[in-house]
Image (tube, rainbow, N blue to C red; front, side, top):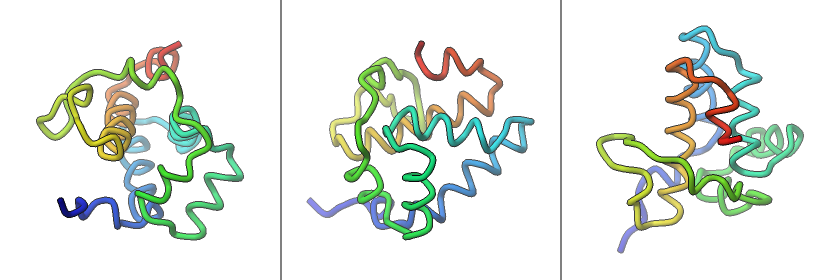
Length: 116
């Protein structure tokens, strides 16, 4: 089965869109970074390095230090698909991040977004 085209997209191209979506709803870049680091296990320096190196989305998630164990608590619909039902583990991680950014943009509290 061929890979989805989104996996080849540079994370550095998607990241500013996440920030733009959040800032458009009066949230911050720092909150976006916190969400990404929570989900992936990257620290701030690691996140910056991945963006600077322009790794693709597949590499970004494949090299993530540790996907958060509570990521399985992320539920809901992104692009018309329930994230908890996505079979492809890589696509599920991508959609988890999309869902978390959506929750941020909708004004949800960080404690709830980070499943604490």
